[in-house]
Structures are given as C-alpha cells and as structure tokens.
Amino acid sequence: MKNKRLTFTLEEAKKKLEIYCIYQDRCHQEINKKLIEMRMIPEACEVIILHLMEHNFLNEERFTKSFSRGKFKIKKWGKQRIIRELKIRDISEYNIKSGLNEIDPDEYLETLKEIAIKKRDSITEKNPYKKSQKITNFLFYKGFENDLVYKVVREIVDLKK
Image 1 (tube, one colour):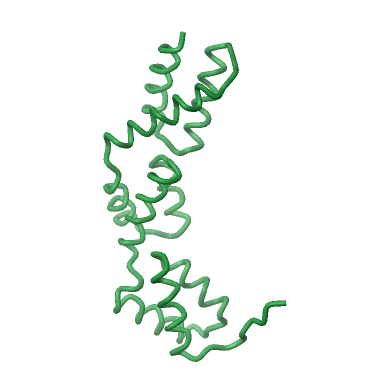
Image 2 (image 1 turned 180 degrees about the horizontal axis):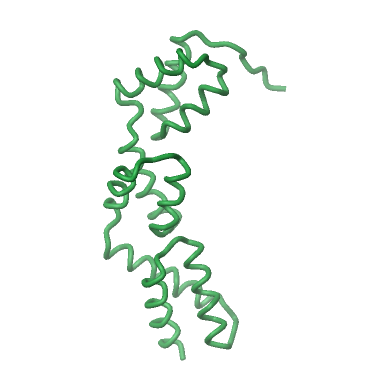
C-alpha cells in the first residue's frame, strides 16, 4: 500500500506544484484539484497559485495553446471537441480563441479529409447512405464542424462510387 503524506508545508507544496507544472502545462482547475488532494487550506492555495503565476509556472494562455495544438495534432480532434474540453476546464473565451488560432486552417481541413478517408476505408457497409452516416457520426464525435463534415463526406463518398 502506498504511504500518502497527510500534510505539506507551504514551501513543500510550492515545490511539488512547480514540478507538477514543469512536467506539463496545467490549467487553474488542475492546480486547484491538486491542492485539494494535498489538503491545503484556502489561504495557502491562494498564495501558491499566485506564486505559480508570478514565476510563470501557471499560464492559462500557454496551457490553452499547447492543449489545442496537442489534441489536434496527436488525437486529431476537431475545434468543437477542443472547445468543449477547454470549457470543462473553465478556460476563458479569449484564451480559447487564442488556442484555436494555433491550428493552421489548411492543415485542419487536410486532417479532416485524411481521417474521413481512413474511416471510409475501414467501413464494410455497402449502402452509400449508411456509410456516409457512419463517417459523419464519427467526424462529429471527433469534434469537427457540421458544414466541413458534410462537405468532406459528400466528396469522399462520391469518389468511392
């Protein structure tokens, strides 16, 4: 059984959270959750968060940009899914827009086409309408916008006929 520490001094908590933030960009919500897990009192939480922000360990705009880039490039998420995930983390509209600007529009459309074609090729359905519905649902789940999804699905299903 893992021996969990029950209390931390203010300096220990600062160091632990600095390391936590260095490992990966974090948002305020993740830091607050970590502070609650560490059982820190609200006054100490405020001091620690202020310290992390002053020393640039905690930067919500940087977090949003790296989150958006990462989820798009690695997980191939669309903008709608990225926005939804950022809103769950209580990120401001300004930072969300800033993060989405990190995604190149041409690369975005190219990625959408690639995953749509890959999905089309993996579906064994013969009926073109059912096939296009399955592709469309998959792309919506990934978080791509309606108009782009319908346009791309029309293109790739017509190409396959």
